[in-house]
Length: 285
Ligand code: NAP
Image (tube, rainbow, N blue to C red):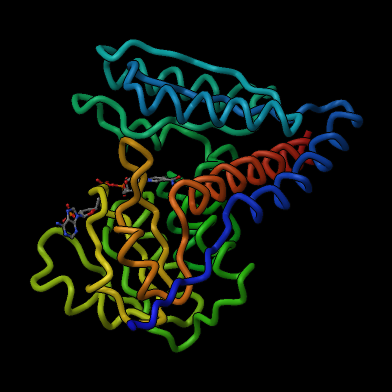
């Protein structure tokens, strides 16, 4: 008989619900004081996944008592038009947080668009200002998905100092910032990407493995160190993560499910940062 082992789950749904409960109370207190926190969502085009993500964020905002303002722009707009729309929202005193749904159509300069978001309203943590603040350990908004990942690890008491964290992916909104946040917590961090030679030789050394690749079931159990903490940030069509859950669950010590792991944590951090932004902006009025 072979011995079977199954990792324990990092339950993002449950942890996110606790965060959102506090956010809801804070939003109610702000509203009672005359300011309803407001998140503006901006969607360019009609990519079905993006439409779903934006709707999900609006629904969760509404449930938490956060107002939402939605801007939908056609896929063929120019960078200048998108920048103008984001600049207007940045200047609108009734809008406290701005989320530009990523990715935007390829012909648009996404970086220029992100940079049109005022840092004090950058509740999704996508601007260079927010990235630099995070990298230097200064106050600011963190990128929502990496922020959610760190919160989940902390909630489960995962020791980070001195551990080897391997991040597969180096995108500006996910892989790169999550590695820097792990570094700030004294993990030893290795970044892997599409040009990494012999990827599995790195992932097999990971005490903490973060998959942020965008390829369904890409990392399998045989590339995971026994007992590792596996964070699957991937979200591919059909609710499939970047980790092959069936094989990974028999090797890992702790693992995030997809869905119900990183996704709800991302939204919780987005809402939490929106209420924080409203609180700070109210203080300055
Ligand atoms: P991205 O911008 O496409 O970046 C993907 C990264 O993976 C890149 O750094 C790329 O390397 C690397 N990569 C691609 N193929 C690889 C390979 N064969 N071996 C090793 N590395 C490889 O994607 P992203 O925006 O970071 O998103 C990644 C995943 O997270 C997606 O599944 C996305 O849906 C999901 N996501 C989830 C949430 C959430 O809230 N749960 C939020 C954001 C994203 P190069 O840099 O060399 O190209």
